[in-house]
Every structure is written in C-alpha cells, then in structure tokens.
Image (tube, rainbow, N blue to C red; front, side):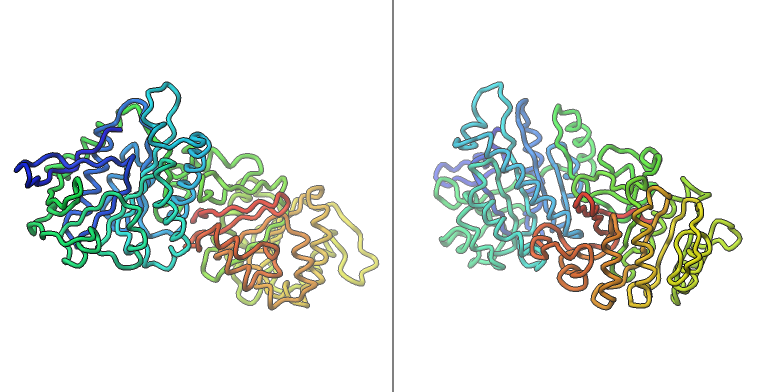
Length: 515
C-alpha cells in the first residue's frame, strides 16, 4: 500500500506546502488534541485514503475501537473488519483475540523475516495480512477498569506489532492515564490544539503553537516541528459518504467482518446476526432447539433433545432464566405438542402461566410430595416405601422443575429418583429441565450431588468467573478455574450467558434469543 496523503505542512525552509504523508506499514501513529480539534477527522481521512490507495494484492484488515462514537459509518467500508464502541465488553475482547490470532498466523508465514520486507516484495504468493488497530480516545479506554486486562497486550502490540504486520493508531486528549509509557513505540506523532506542556511531552521540545483552527496542528517532519493542516475526508460528509460507500463496495476486496449484537437477539432478527444468515425456521429441525448465537463466531447454539435429556439453568435474578425456559419449552411445544408436560413450582408460582389447566397432557404441582405421588401412581418410579409399585408404559414426558425445595434436604429423595430416571431417559423419552437452580452454597450436598451427576448440559446467566469463585463451587461448573475464565471471557451483559455441554466438556458464551 502506498503512503497516505493526510494533509499539507508548512516547510519554512523552502517556503512551500508539501504533502504530509504517512506510511502505516512503517509506523505506529498517535494523534493528540482537545475536543473538536480534528482528531476524528484525521482518522476518517486515514481510513478513506487506505481505500483510495487500494491496489490489487493488498491484504488489509482494519479494527476500530470507537470510544469517541463517531466512526460507525466508516465501519461499513470493506477493509474494516470491526468497528465497536464501548457498550459491550465482549466486543472489545473479540477484537483483541482476533488481532492476536492474526499476528500468530503472520508470524508463521513470515518465519524470521520482517513484515515490511515481505509485504512489498513483487510476488504472486499471497501476502500476509496487514492489520491496523485504531483506538479512538485511548485515554478513556485506559481509564476504564474493565480494560485493565488488555493493557499489557496493547503494550506488546505497540512495541512488537510492526515487525509482524500490525500498526497501532491512537487518538488522545493528553499524555495522562498512562499514555506516556506507550509513547516510545510511536514513530509518527501529531498534535492539534493542546496546552504547551502537552506539545513538550509529545515532541520532547518546545514548538510554536499552531493557528487555532480545527484541523491545524504540529508534526515533526525530517526532524523539525512543522505546522500542518489535515485534509477533510469529504467536503460534505452527509452527502458524499453514502456514494463513496457504494463505490468502495465494488472493490474486489472484503474482509470477514466481526458482527456485533445490536440490542436484543430475537426470532425476527436472528438471520441478520447469524454467521450464514439462516433464520430460526431453517435451523429448528427434528429435535433441535435454537437458544442463541455464539458470541465469537455467531454460530447457532442449539439443544439437541435426542442427545440431551437433563438441563439445568443457573443465573442471576432477572437476568433471563425465565426467558430461556420459554425458548426451550417453545421449541419443544412446536415439535411435540402431545408430549406430557409436568411442572413442579413452589410458592413463587413462576411456572403457573406456562400451565394450561384444561390440557390433559399437562400437570402442575407446587409440592414435592405431590410430584412423588404422581411418579408413583403413573408408573415412572415408586415412592420410598411403596413395595407394590408397578412400572407402567409412559408417554414422552418433559419435567420442568422450579422449586427451591429440590435443592435442600427435603428434595433429595425426588432428585435421587430423577437421577435414576435420567439413566433411562433416552429409552423412555424423558426430559428434565431444572429451570432455576438455587445457589449451591445453601443446598444439601447430597441433593447437589444427585443433580450434578444427572445433568447432560447446563446454562449460566451470570458472569462465569465470579459465579465459579463465589456461588458455583459445588455446581457442574465447579471444576473450572476462575482465573482462566476471567482471562477468557468478559463479564456478562443482560441477555448474555453460557452453555456448557457437560458430556463433551464444551463451554460457549452466547447471546440468548429474547422472546
């Protein structure tokens, strides 16, 4: 890619105004300035120039962390793989993980060579990808405690990235919030209207203040401070950006874009966010229930009722457990309306609105003893002490269990029964959904053991690292390492959670469908 023409500068020695060029393959770039001085305009022009300069064979991916909130439309350009704001921590995590994976791939391709040398060779061999990571308002990024885990990674990106094909571009208001420790990695520095002490911090010398006009600033060119003026991306952005997006969409180039969830995931918009664009109706076949989309690859997360017969739902209050239950039962009802449905509720009566009293295939109980009597009289399993119990042929049955008594000593008898029934669940067509598992620390250990040993899968609607370290030590998640989980996953937003396939030991973070 050719150097980018970003503006003009005043060359006092020759009394001319040459073009101000930057080469993102060679340098990291940092841009300082106050509010409305031209920092974001600089970024917009840079992104625009990268598309203007596109040549066949270029292999470029741009990742934008938009803490300024002004670059979303530029995120639609074909070289931009992601443009995320700070509303969802998991999106930031995805950018860092993707960039790390790209660098690892480049490292293998380059072997011991330097990226710049290989990228500019005239060769028919595919070039390693060049990655541009833009953080608009790095000051806010570093000040947010949620991002502390990325500081060291970001430092490594700045220090070592150029040799592997990564250029880092920051904007900042000043050199505070720890920005100073990154400065040595930035070969190109620009400053718009800032206090004199900031100019000195940026350039290590006293400079003449530029004309106080948006887009005017100072840069060091050939070792000397020069006043410059940034080109505007468009004369009229509102009128010209749309047609330009139409034009660049015709380029013979596109990247794999990281999609971001925009609000709730629903049945109606599911296809917009799924990796291949398929909707629910194309995916829910046979025994498949779609519950959401994986956060990283946007692949559907499904429950296959042919393989999974016993499910637990853990999570925070008002974090979506009831919604998930509706999704699971809705899929089952659509496929098997004539199955038998048995609800065990408690004093909260949160399952009552799921029960249809006039439906002969539905049964609703609020006491554990009532459920045990039902199992005994209908031939599922004899209640303790009933030596005359006769096993009977039973229809496929879905048990929905949301009673806090189950997870205390009084409920361990029925849990022991269900753990035995789970062993023959596939043969007899039995399904168990524990729809609100009480926090493990308050329950009976024997009851917890019965539950854990009978489960095929579990959902968690909570931040998993904190859950395992606190309430979940005796749950099916209890063997996981909280430190590793904290490094791997960001904290959950409302509507987020985890699916854990216990038998395959596979954990996925997902956005749940909202009904």
